Length: 223
Length: 223
DNA sequence: TTTAGCTTTAAGATTAATTTAAGGTAAATG
DNA sequence: CATTTACCTTAAATTAATCTTAAAGCTAAA
Image (cartoon, rainbow over all chains, first blue to last red; front, side, top):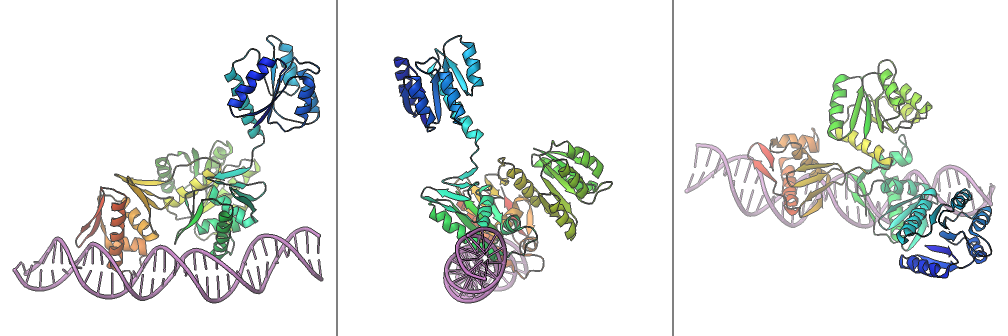
């Protein structure tokens, strides 16, 4: 998680940098608006902490420029006490949150956490996760610790069905109805072939999860 | 979790209501199609169990009306035996699942769980409990204080039969009919072998419950 | 039309559940 | 007490379900 800190008061900048590093963020700190804008425009940051009062270019202009360039990195503005108009302008200009100096470290950390989280919610990652592997619903890819594979449509649908019901017995009939349709002529063997394919792919991406067979009952995905 | 039950056979309706309440669902039951549609249109239910043959408005029409009003509450249709065209129409019309009468309670519960789960909620496993051990109906596992074991299909069915009748005598003939089917050629010895298997597994998971033999009568599971 | 990639079919191999069978144990009977 | 009968337990045999692979069949895109 990479943060950009744009703050000209050297002492405060260093203190915040220390604080953020201690909390496992990777931090780039710059001391004036011009450098701030340059860095911010790269778009590589997960979040920007931006002071408003800055030499050369002020924070609000940076923010405006950023949004004009369609960079949607979340921004927390730091404003001096009482400057309510800054706050309004800032939020109107696309800031995600603001903090009035002086503030408690915990306050800043909490807001950073909230924004980083919110970002995750705005762009919901369409991924189902079970133990040590993931099924990416957007790309039809099965992702594990030692790689990822494309799944075909049938493989995907079968695995998805399992992933909604981890550690539960699933009957072949139910699976066939869900994947091939209720009026399909698909035989058990069709499903069995795909289970075989899936097991290979699960192995290939290096997950510990397995599809175990329950003879006469069906299958069960075990984490 | 709020369910709507639309079923005109009063006896069945009441039986199902009891069953669902026992399984911790909150249930509204109505006896004709008109009321059914009114209730369903409120959209407050998490799932609807809908009979097809109904007075006033039939189930398929209710379903159609619902979907036309963009109400996407999951629907399980109840259909009389053999009415395949109903089934086809129903699933085409936006039903999520269907069940042919007569059906086992467990079957209905399982399908409700499956549909509700699809909405992303976590549903606890369905488990039968007797004194100090449990039969997990979703995983086919026997769970005790000192571990759990997989049961095979026959073991599972026999144990389930006992657990629905704790401390009661059970005849061998009944068990054989239930597990092997009424026209099976299974000998008493077949059952006896499985009782032996089960006793071992019960011991293994560390329960105090036992299956005692009643000479000339059958067996009894004692807590 | 050709091609590539899925899906289905089919057949033989494998494996685990189930059944059979046989020898032993304990309860009931007389 | 002897004997019958029901039941238990184990291991081997059988059966049926499932696995796996390869090839054939499809379908949509090039």
